Length: 606
Image 1 (spheres, rainbow, N blue to C red):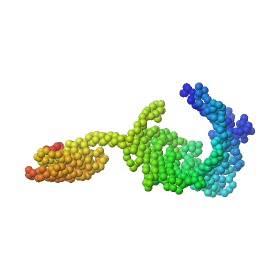
Image 2: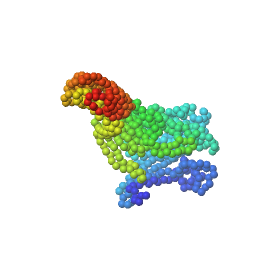
Image 3: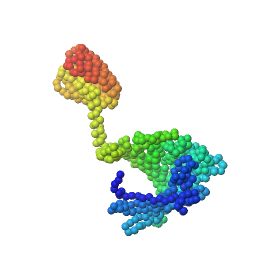
Image 4: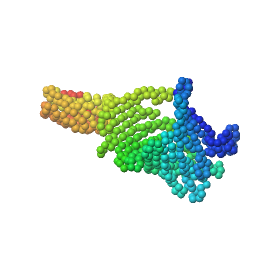
C-alpha cells in the first residue's frame, strides 16, 4: 500500500521471559520462566490431549525500543530505551512475576552516544486476594497472591518520586454485598490455579484494589523543598457487573467492573506552605445515574462517558471558598456499530462521543461571572457548530463558528474540513431570525391568515366616504399574541388615522377625529380569538355602534360576528355573519366578501 519509506520508525526488541539458561523451553528448564504457565504449553506438532481450552500468555518480554528518522534514504538512530527486568520474590511462597527494574535512555548524536542515568523503580508487595474471605475462619488453601507495586521512582534528573497507597478496605469476615459494594475490594467467581479437577465449579472470592493517597516529589540535587500532593476520594467506589467478558459464562459474571470514584480532591503543599485544593467530579459510565456539579445541576451518565470529567473546581486554598468551576456535559451519538454476543450476554455498541458544552463560573465579589461554550455534532461525531456565548449575563460578546466538511464516504474520509466560518453571535441571530420571519410569513400566506387580515375591512366606521382599514401582522401559528397596525380615514374630509396594537389591548386616537378600541387574544394554531370593538366617529357623531366577535381555529379563521350600529341618516341596523379564510360576511340582505360597501353599515370580518 505504501511504496515510499516512512519518515520515521520505531523498532521493538524482545527476549525470552527468562533471565538464565533460556535456550530450551521444556519441563527441565521451565522454572527459568517463573511466570510462564508451562503446564499450558503445547509444542508445535504435538497432540495435547489434556489441554481442553485456549489459554493466552507469552514467553517474551520487551527489552529495547529504538527510534530513527529517514535521512538521505537511510534510517538514522535517534533514541534508544533499554528495559531491565527482574523476578523478585513476593515473599509468600508463590512464583515471582516479571518486574520492570529500570529504563535507560540513550541519545544518538553526531559526535557519539550519550546515555542518561537510568530511571529505576522500587517496589513493595501488597496482597491481591482478601485472604480467608470465603473460608469462614478456616485456613485458606489459596495464597493471598502478593504482588509488587511501584512505591518509588528515581528519575534520570536526580529526583525521587514516592508513592503511598491506601490500606486494605476488606478482611476475612468483613466483605460487602456485591451488588451494593462501595469499598476497595471486589468479588470474582473463579477457579484458582490449584482447583481440584477440570470440572471444579468456580466460586465467589474477594480481591483487594488500591488507590494512591499521596505523592512526594524530592529534589535530591538542587535542595528544593519536597512537593507533597494528597488525594482524597469521596462518595465511595462504584462497581458494576461485567457485561462484555466473552470468556466467562454469564452465570459467573459478578460486580467486578471497577467504576472508580465520582469525586476526588487534590491538595498540594506541606508544612508551613499554603495548601491548594482542587476537586474533580467524574462520569463513571453508570447508565442512567445522575452526575451533579457543585451547583447541583445533573447530567445523565451513560456507559460511553466512563472516565470523562463532569467538573473541575478550584478553591481559594485548602480552607477557602470556591473560586472557579468548569463543568462539562458530554455528547453521545446513536450507535455507530453493534456486536451481538453469545452466551446470554447483552449486545455491545460503539458510539462517537464529544464535548457538548463547557460552562465556566468565576467568583466576582458576592456573585458569579459565567461564560459558556456549546457545540452540535453530526452523526459521526464531528463538530458542526460551536457557540461561544461569552458572559451569559451580557449580550454582544457572542461568537458562532460553523464547520462544513469535504467528505468522501467511498474512501471513508469523513473528517476533512472544507470551511470554518466564524461570525458574531448577534449577527448570526439576526440572520436566523430573518430566515424564521420569512418562513413564517410564507406559511401564513399559504394558510390564508395574513391575506385575510390584509384585505379584510376589520373595522369600518360609516361616514360619507369614510372607512377604517386594519393592516395586520400576525405571528406564525403557535405564537401567543397578534400585532396590528391600524391606518385609515373616518371623516368627511381627508384625514389620517394611525394606531398600533400589541398583545391584548390597543388604542388609536388621531387628531380628535376618530377614537377606537379593540381587544383580542390569539392563542396558538387551534386557539380562540375573542374581541369587543367599539367606535365613535367624531366627524359624524351619530354614527356609532359596537360589535362582538369570536373566532375559533385560528388557522382557518372561522367564526361568527355580531354588529349593531346607528346611522346619522336614521334607522338602526344589524349585521350577523359567518367568515372564512378570506372573510365572508352576511349583513342585512347583502352578501359581502370582506369588502367595504358605502352605506352598508358596520362590518367586521376576521
